[in-house]
Image (cartoon, rainbow, N blue to C red; front, side, top):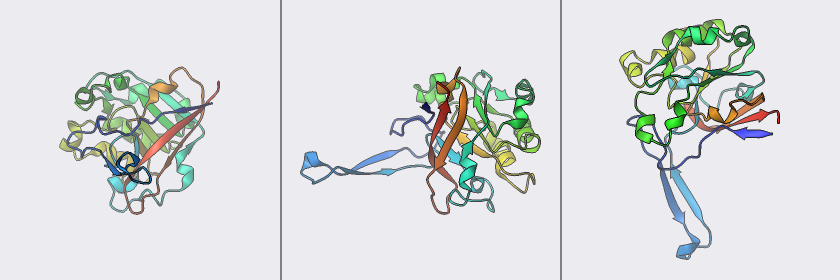
Length: 226
């Protein structure tokens, strides 16, 4: 059985503060006498459920078209259920509650519970919970099987602290000049609530191969045991 963890793209969806809005443009419409219905979109790559490649915060990093396809398949995903309030950060002690499972996981799905307010776009985008710099460093340097992290908020990094601190959390995951260990991909705005209390066998999260770019929308799909 398969469960989708990505949100639909639409023009009214919540977006990170000051990001460009989505635009859906009707190019041809049969209702107006055209032969077909055909559309185009103007999409910002960091709106909606998406994955960040290393190039997003590391100028020498791989772009989304260059990452091996195996990087987007996860055989040992681990859900981190850590209810966090507005502006609260995930710290290392939350992670350590999961013991040995941390060290075999290849994907950490961080469920803060903040997705419950996603229908209120302004609230969802305002000082949401995120990951601390210490937790990001711990994941990058100690959890060496982890290929990616996913979170149920608009960003892995606080929208208040990130710009003030030169985006240290994103760089802890993506920048090879910061740490020599493998980079860790970042999935943001993921509907992790859909797999609460489910036994997840595998997760697939294939991106569009956008040449030379730093991110892609992605349809995250969990294979669960019925």
